Length: 306
Ligand code: TUI
Image 1 (cartoon, rainbow, N blue to C red):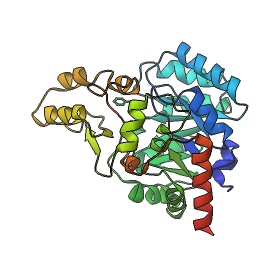
Image 2: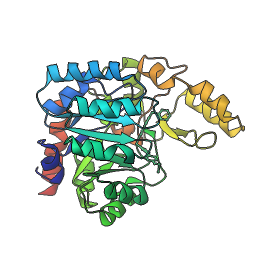
Image 3: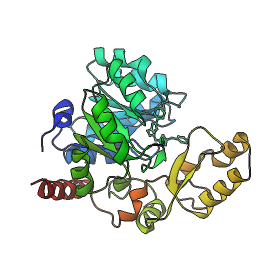
């Protein structure tokens, strides 16, 4: 299944792992890369030394290319941007902002640059700045989201730019990959399905939340109290947060209640954790090795595309 994205990244299958803060660490990244996809370590808010160790651990597990995701709201973004160059990583994906100021340096170092974009304007801006591809992410995705849907966003971005487009948000199986191709994408980014990968190091509690989620068990918090809405699983905690902001809490109060909540979810704290996952969680029903997840996606999509 060769596409412009498999060519660009030197990978076998057009599947990029989502860069999930606190979640996408070396074991998952190496497993996805070994299985023919593009594995990713997520920088999140971690200091560069921590991510340096993650990169070393991933290099010890795989000789396949993998990348780093940089969350641009992080105070450590500058350090992580430099780390990508120092570690000679194959590619970088970015989220939650514009990576414009880093692109030239990354390109000079031979790093492929794939910004996540929630809209057409940023997609065009990123291509003008030198991005090698863009990841058009719809609001079906988990974590921090924009306003447009994958179905509407991907073809508009594909029409607007002349670099490869990767579809993200709401894709977890071969039908999603085939559909993404029909929308003009040449690959997909998948996060939520990999939460239930055997190699994913989150708590069993987090995996159970994802596996038990139904189609209606998703909620977006932070639309009123913040400028960075986040999609996650409907839990007692996320419902309480939503009520809090509906009642007009201040952004400070909101931030105080949700600070560190993703890490708490990763550690299995159901009472105070923010279990970020996409709308497609309702379709994720079992834990499997990353290689089996990828094989199944490729087999199903291949059959459909014939
Ligand atoms: O970044 C993500 N998903 C994330 S980041 C994250 S960590 C976090 N934790 C708590 C609160 C907020 C974040 C969890 N999930 N996805 C990619 C993504 N990027 N979605 C939306 C965007 C985005 C938004 C605005 C990208 C660029 C952008 O640009 C604004 C500008 O500067 O033009």
